[in-house]
Image 1 (cartoon, helix red, strand yellow):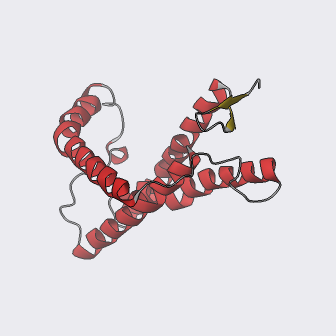
Image 2 (cartoon, rainbow, N blue to C red):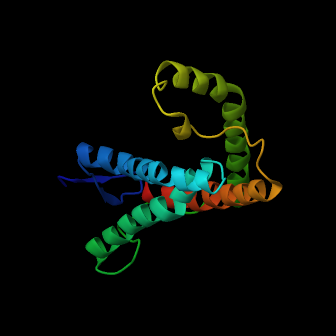
Image 3 (cartoon, rainbow, N blue to C red):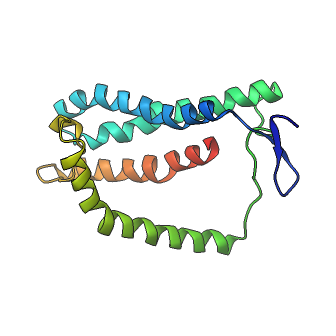
Amino acid sequence: MSNMQRNKENIDFPQIPLSKSVLLHLLPGILITIFYIIMVPLITLLDFPNRLALLLGVPFVLVPFEFGFIIYQCKKINNIISFEGVIFFRESMALWKYFLFTLILLFYALSITTILAPPIDNFILDKIFFWLPEWYILTTSFIGYTKDYLIIMAIMSIIFNGFIGPIVEELYF
């Protein structure tokens, strides 16, 4: 059992080297950053907020890379596309636990993004990333954008940032 480890359910799962783990954690973010840098000029030329370039990174970079890696691992391990031996801990929870965890995490996320994040973000931007060009910083003000643009952004945020991205991320990690 050199590169395998057992969990409490007595399931063998492989342990990957630390260097590979770090690479697999950082690579999606690096790829999305490259996509963002390439797409921001086009997005702003079309008068959309630069945040759209980041949202588009989910379907065009994150999903193909992470889900593609999962499928690659499925074929490598099983010779077919099967999650067996690739994605562990697939047991479902009681429905009430999903609702409870959703409410707790929603409260946590809203608290962090509305109370803690703004002063910390501003401090980090001012003290550490002051050298970044203005176009690189995500737009926080949507003043001047039409209602249609804002609706498109809201729908895309819910779909890509609220459902598709997190589901693929959970499968990947």
